Image (cartoon, rainbow over all chains, first blue to last red):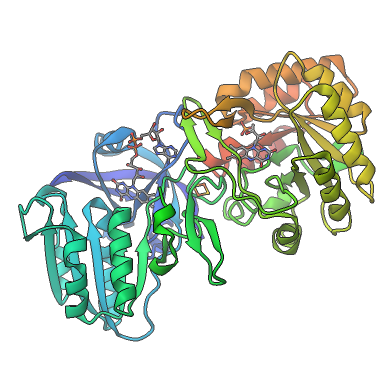
Length: 267
Length: 265
Ligand SMILES: Cc1cc2nc3c(=O)[nH]c(=O)nc-3n(C[C@H](O)[C@H](O)[C@H](O)COP(=O)(O)OP(=O)(O)OC[C@H]3O[C@@H](n4cnc5c(N)ncnc54)[C@H](O)[C@@H]3O)c2cc1C
Ligand SMILES: Cc1cc2nc3c(=O)[nH]c(=O)nc-3n(C[C@H](O)[C@H](O)[C@H](O)COP(=O)(O)O)c2cc1C
Ligand code: FES
């Protein structure tokens, strides 16, 4: 069940190229599952579309109970506004929204692939998987070191971590597509979770299918309302029945099986 | 605070506008649908339609532009969406759309056999004469005499004439109004909604209510606050529809309904 509340910004700090925001949003953090997101209302009332952000972490904050952590790339209308927001600001917020990552019933080996800011939902997922006894391998990618979400924290939850950057500023130089096949084989993963740009998700889903692994992809599609009301977030898929259709990314997704997405039809 | 719209009695003056409440299920976390005046469904066509290509809903200052929304088709709608809505306790107004008069009347005939809806809404966007013939055809083919709400574009130059025509043709009420004809930045046809159109919609409601004082008018277009709702009611509307504001804040309809309710002595 999702809630619409007024959140309060408790903390905002720069980490690399991003801002990490801590928000109290009564009731939302308690209902969080990895892969869900929140929709924010911009302070500029002339902008009616919501903006969606992954819930990166849920952490207790003294005196407030569990708080949400979001990672914001400070670009664009929403990104620059959020990044510049002073502590104490109130933000209209709806969440948690969307279908979370499905967790395996057995303690199987899992590969988690995340790129740039989109990797945000994978960190709490790694924790959950480890609690269930799954062996977790992380593949974290970024444009450069500043755009790489810190793999440091994640090392606690992961058995192995691979880092790639497009410019080689840290880790291996390259893209996810260059290393995913090998990483997947080495981890002998049965389930692959991915969050990143569409091309990356496509490459991961294809590699998983080739190696007989399940894939769960967190797909970012522009979401005008983010709550399932407007049908403006079409995600092209093939249904269980083999029929091509579009579903709403915000309600039937954002996490969907990678082998069900018609990647070529996704703008 | 019950509201009488010709043959239709509703428990309150706040309606969810077509295409802005999902299938109903998505709105339920934020409002008890049974407490609202009615839930107008997204427009249902005879056959499934995939809707316009992405981007389909685009932001514009104080408004949203939407291109043709998808439709599940009548049979899938009757099989799952409608029964759920009826069970939720909502008064369900089914919005219908067709590419021809024949398609409209075919939907009307089949819908007339389905249990549950309290009314049918038809958006009429063409010439006043065509609008009236469309409404007349739908009214004729609805077997149980379900009331028909005719939804008009907020065009101040033609809205009174169109309203008169559709009411003469048997519409129980007029909805003033729909989204305004507009275009997406890439030129594809779209509807403009939200606060950007509110002053124009209010002008249309005012003119229709003044010219046709006995008409049952449902006002809409850019309503986002209780003060907005009040201005449409003061202009003579008996009920109001909330659309775009729900996409911005899904609790809007519940809040306006509760605040209006508190004010009535
Ligand atoms: C599920 C999901 C999770 C996400 N998680 C994160 C995250 O964790 N961190 C992060 O930094 N970003 C995240 N994003 C991206 C984020 O929601 C915004 O899209 C991004 O910040 C850019 O928004 P902006 O307003 O800055 O865009 P701009 O680049 O300024 O927008 C360009 C144009 O697009 C239009 N536009 C933008 N958003 C919408 C919309 N929703 N509907 C209609 N029109 C729109 C604007 O009107 C504007 O004219 C996520 C997106 C999704 C779908
Ligand atoms: C995303 C979206 C989808 C809509 N879909 C429909 C629809 O299927 N049928 C219809 O008659 N009107 C549709 N409308 C129009 C609304 O019902 C409403 O009449 C119009 O937007 C003006 O009111 P508002 O400003 O409160 O939204 C839609 C509007 C939006 C924003
Ligand atoms: S964003 Fe409106 S339905 Fe998904």
